[in-house]
Picture (cartoon, helix red, strand yellow):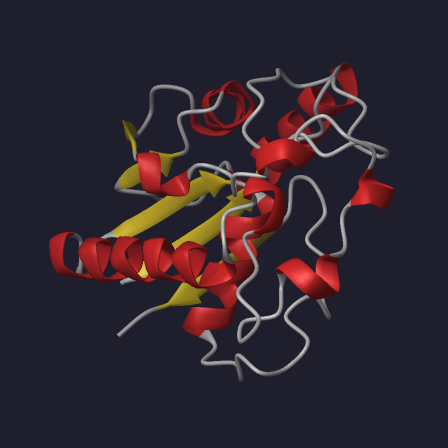
Length: 178
């Protein structure tokens, strides 16, 4: 099975300074432009299915990238991490080392704990491997989901720095799953 992970394009909300979590915001003009550029990069790629987060920024990204050339299904497990009381707050209120510490597993301020996020992503991966084992699937989702999926797929040490790599908007990476 081949999967392609894509992070949505840049959003209209002040994403550089605020945490938007599950806020349902649309793409910015730059986000649309970046998605159209990515569309050109993948126009000759074959996908059997697109699975997408239900939030507008991901649905819009998926439609810009693949339109109606591929069956698209929404999966709630691809929702962005719930940022609880931190949603809409300045990024400096968020301590990534606290909320990405697998053993600490903090849910302070209503933030979805990291172990629940990983469980959700593991369930999603197991499910699509069983259902679509011989398919090429493109998945359009959010930074935290891609980070968790990447860590799971690459069997990274959960005691390591889980934020050591960057996942910019319109990130794309392909994986072969067994």
